[in-house]
Image (cartoon, rainbow, N blue to C red):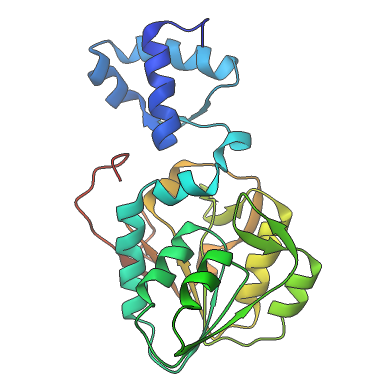
Length: 254
């Protein structure tokens, strides 16, 4: 970042931590005008280091799907609050299908002490965590291993998952578009999520508010598809059934 001034370097350090920053917040933080911050943003976007969107900047889509451990730590308290709300609504004796992502892993953490559950997943972390409970039956789909994401994808995964009719299907997503679509970064990810939802009695989305401030290129399904959206995002259309998960952690400090 040798070609950037000190303020721009500080902006990039923050952006790498939280993946989204607001123009007004940055202007107040650095005690400069919003016009000055916009000039910084223009340069960062011209260099391909950031992506402009309404009200601020985010990481470029190609860089947004960061490694698993970093995503696990990002907004962790928000994800925990969402996972607690999800687990509280899962009754004993049902079959649950859990998809890819760290929020699904957080849901698995909240189910560790439960009994008489059947869980179907392609998420290695979910299978590993719930496999420690002898009262939970776990089915893990086999396919192409994505070590960086701790999951399995591919045709064999689709075939395996499509054999089940879960009571509850739970997926996360990489982003939610302005048009109200849950989106993923790759077609493989989107295909798995579509299959998980296809035969379920109830379809739930888990997504912390940062997902409304990111972009991903592959559409999965409309938010209207879901029976419930578990989130702490407050701008969701009132026509979408949701559980609003509150917490006391400011954005970017999870």
